[in-house]
Image (cartoon, rainbow, N blue to C red; front, side, top):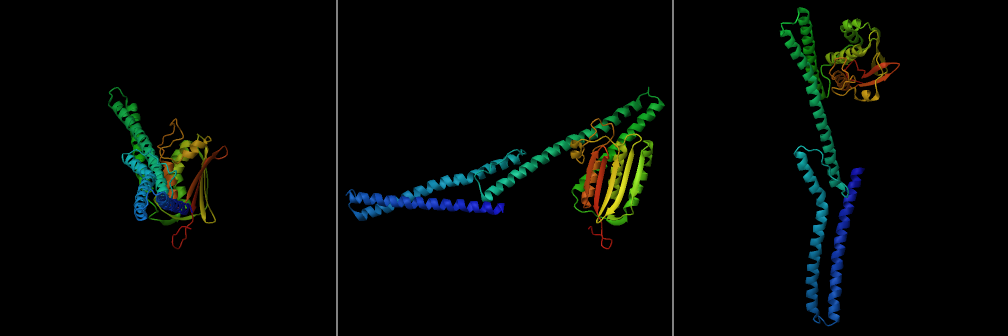
Length: 357
């Protein structure tokens, strides 16, 4: 509808311009005729034949002059936004995405072109800001473990270090190296998934058994923190990529263990409701602010600004992308009743053809 309105405005503008130009030319001809007739009546130009030739010439000359002036003025009016657009395009080509072209006074295709250009520069500007933030955060997150490894490696070479200290330094180096390796793997996987539109290698398997296996893999961690686990898993068949879904559950469960207080509790539920599979993972923790919840799925975002819990801010963005590729949704709430709760909704699959409902 908006496009047709723009086209109609453009046609109205062109029609008005043609009407105005034609009217001016006719008026100039009429005025010239009156002038020649008056000159003839006053005997200033008694030869009517000569007067007619002169009138014709003057009418033609005046019409050409008026047409030239109108063409110059109107072309300047029409081409001004295009010249602005060309100048802005050259600026964008140099890497500056700030230019905006004023669409006021334009209509039709020209207005649509300007609005599309402005939308493009806004998007490019956002991408550039995100790219700079990503590079800065990425550099910081990688630099931290590298500096730590280098520092403790130097301590290992110190002759004053005891065997116990050497062992502790070696454990820290191994831990930081594993952290670096995990971060690299997550970045590569996230980059791959962001450029992927469909899930491949899908197969039918028991989702509840997959969740139990992921919980058992983290048994050492939740036992060390003396956490209580409440597990309610209904028998649920699911069609998906076994490896990717396992990666998503491990990230969510690791997150729950990491941020649960000593002696806290974790709840894991899985059930089917109509054509949707629900997986809910809750854990005790302090209530998160709305700002934290708004950014919790952003790359490298860490709500814990103190960095008391080790992490790289890539786990939850990965989880969200995996769930999205599966055609599902993930939501998060945080309050005094639930602590923090992640609710994952996945579409059920037709067991005969593997299509998601």
